[in-house]
Image (cartoon, rainbow, N blue to C red; front, side):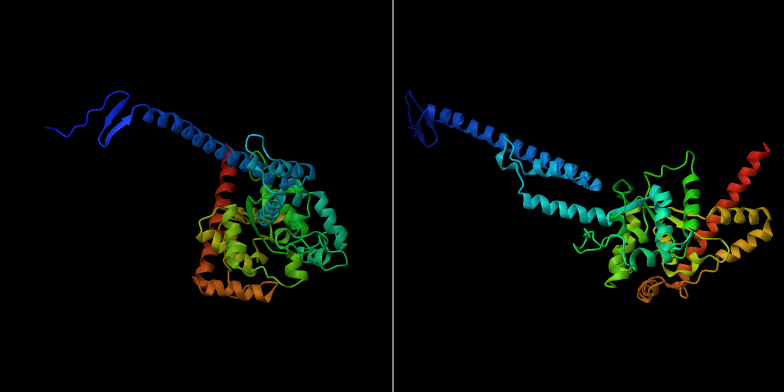
Length: 376
């Protein structure tokens, strides 16, 4: 005899007993819309996120040019409820917070275009402010920020919200974009020296480099000189890891501007020696450039053979990071401490010597190849 229970229609037999046959069907019918609703809501949330992210990206792009119309357009777009998903809108306060965040970020990673540095617009600004035909950047420093009408004094800095912005936030907007190159140089250079060296950089490739697509990290333009020079509340060596190494690694390549090969100022400044060391030890590509007259002198000595090359090599190997100087004593102290606490001065000196000797070797090979090509 079995314990099986006999169920008659409209009941069906289950392990626990009998059940109306239509109850599972009803459950399936009721659950199906729930599953469909969950899938639909998932798609809506995904689309909401995608639309919002796309609009925020567009807003970020519009902020590079700071066009009020575009910024307002994307702000309204983000704040406006969507008919298909009314909880999709951001509050205006949230959008304004993102705008502030974007502006600060762009200010920190923004570089100045090669076009602007080579432009008559910048040259005329420097000459008008300093009253000199060929001022040094140290002289520009005095005229740009320590005079009666400092550049950018009435512009709120996007980084700290205080009056007085970096020059990169003052120049024409098309000339400010994400940094593509890090420039290693000194403020002792004249306007003419830097202009000539960067013209050489522009012409070093075939076809010549597009000046509107190269954006330099140049401390003169990118650092907020109001905080460093005017207010004196910051130093170039503050947070050395971020102020220098992060900018260098972000750009991924360095352009080293030497004033000359013969007793160069470049090798007497602690910042430029340290920058060379970090670039070399990080295996980042470094391109050396000099003003046209200095490059012509180098080529002339190369043509002299062994005697000329010995003179060039002896000059560029005079690297002494321990005796190198900085404009600000605090910077000099911090950078030298960073060298002393890591690999030491002699290791830095040797890295820089090797980089410069490699560069001279490339210049010799290039000149020899040009002579061979001319003879064919």
